Image (tube, rainbow, N blue to C red; front, side, top):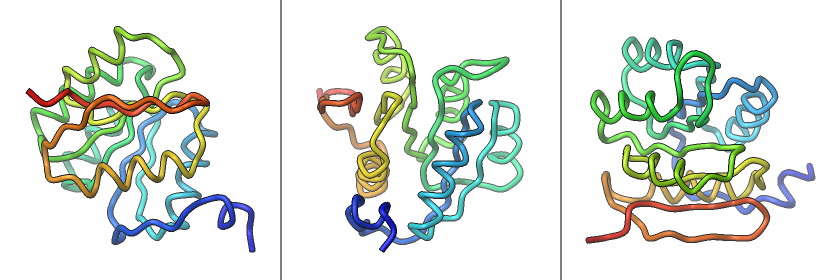
Length: 157
């Protein structure tokens, strides 16, 4: 049995289209490999312009993983665009910078979770599963876990 199967709990979601936007080719490849093992079709791109092209031409995605820092345009700007054009797409922000202002900005822009790099792959898969299982727009309160994984959403009013 491959190590990934031994360390990752099984997901309970049906296959769904996932968009990955990250300038780091290694992260894109890792996430693509892991999520394809879960039977999810993946579109992985390196910048916001490519992401917009896929979102415009190919229709919606079940979830989007967007790096906070991208070449040419920030992930926050892409998130705002996504909210205005595809408001029902849950978005998970990926960040290598542990900055509370970034977390607040991403939350205000509509991200449903933030995952800090480096991350445990099985925890990221769990975050994706959580995002897919919530009704559109449903928020969750902030949760922190050790070893660089942070999940959050806007707190309920």
